[in-house]
Length: 401
Image (tube, rainbow, N blue to C red; front, side):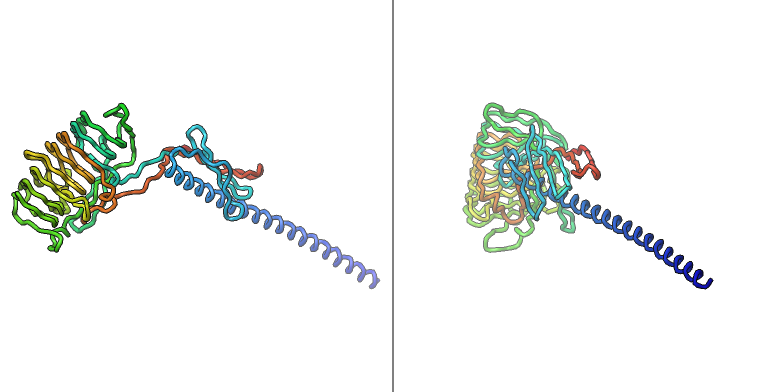
């Protein structure tokens, strides 16, 4: 009897061991399956991340190529990097299809890219930031910018604490833009669909706002060997100066420059907080003068808060000319860059010639805000998908950029 009981106990223990072994085996298999699934999910998630990074690399690559070549039509084969990551860019009917891949993960987007010219103004001959322009018989060697629509200009503002920034600005009203008998050797940039010259003139519409030059002329009031500072002087005639002539005028005063050779250029000081969109602080009347010399410091006539006009004979300007407004300037030659914040009223029988060195080396106290050329995104549609039929995710959205 005792042996039978002992045998039954051994059988029960064996059965319990078998049950527990099966249970642990099932748990182990489940844990293994779960771990495998988690590892696979993690692997796919990492792959999707790498595919997205490859996609972004493809987009940046397309933008760089379009910057160098506006007619670029994409790639013939994928570009591989970082082991198995790759991207491919193809052009289809004006739209660039970009693919990013990593193992099984795949990402796509379709994007419309528009090549943009340099958005700064250092490479332009004439920049008109006001709401009215009147040109007659003007020959422009270089590019012309007409800010002829709301939203086309970012104005520069300086606080009393000395903090400056660009803010949406421009003219309060946009009136007539008249270009009569005017010739431009390069591109006319504009913000509307208006045709100003036609014929063989290259007229291009741009979307990125033009930045008004940042300016602060306070350092020109510091005495130095390269300048002559005039205080309470409103008339200068028959003078020759090789240094920069700096004028500190009271608000409302008119400065007359007659038959002078001011080869170091002229600076008309104004408080850095002055709002250039209000009426000009001063007026400068120029008669038969030679201003600037085309070399460093590239100062032509810096007068961001003054209106400039001619009296009698025309004049020559070499370097950067930055004016608040232009009123009846005739028979003049400007070699460098001419920037006018407000109205250009009757620029006649004159020549404006771009000087690249002026744009690359603007004078002290002025920043032209030059930006590199690029390619802007006008519309973008994204799609993310895993090649595996069991795991897929798609997202499609049209985005105005």
